[in-house]
Image (cartoon, rainbow, N blue to C red):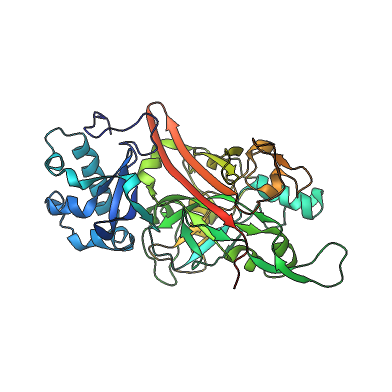
Length: 416
């Protein structure tokens, strides 16, 4: 996109620049859920755009823009969805665009309600940050053997709970659970005392595969529509007691939050960077060529109720040891099928420095070193009525592509 003289006002450093054009689902007081893109501080209602006839040359059924999820739109395939994105970019920079004759196609974001963008039938959470895995292994196992023997040979993952994934802005109650207190002989049942955020990113599947088929690192990205921010909440005390031998369960399934706008892989293409060196060498099916990591700046803030927020982590998606192409290739190597709208999560994203760790577990080193907030209070983990906010963006020269934010408050335990 070379012409950036848009007739729509886009604030400086907006996440939703003309280079972005992310897709989402919104509603307002006048109509039900429908498909839109974000541009600056506005939403472009694609159902109304379709009514202008702009999309007629693309031969797209208009009903796809009035669905309550993006699945049907994504299922059109990248040739169609990219054509929509490219046409919108062109028209927003065209002073004679038909869209200027229909001002109702633009709605202020403040007047809209954003919804979960896709129906997520299946959800897989990976464990692909070597810094995070090393930190956790150091805390809970032998520091000299922090990584499990398989970690550098395959992208470790587990099947998560899709039903409790929700969109930014929906608060969640502190979970109850079974825990084993220190030096106790028997577990107890009660509220989790160690609710934690996990700084992650998710990618949304854009193309189905048939059961028995496999992908390769050379074609896996063709099956990825785009990315979102993800806060994959954890109850650390519940997790510590329950995870052996089958891994996370109730400690993770009580809630996960994603950002409402899906940023396409095409928008992220300018921000490709090399990933870390993978040593030892991976098996041939996980080998890849080209730059498969992405330079995406990430931050996490904690905001006590009615107080100023404090940024507690500054990280970057480029730190990931296993890239998305490897994750998806490994996911399908046994013939497991994937479907449009499925979500794959990165796992907690941590860097090498303490201020880049992606969880309170690491930032406070298991609660031993509390984080001090701007109001003077301390946090070992997340308190009731704290809001956790995750933001992310990429920038290269004059090109900025952002994700907005994913935020949610931890409410007290819900009374029955």
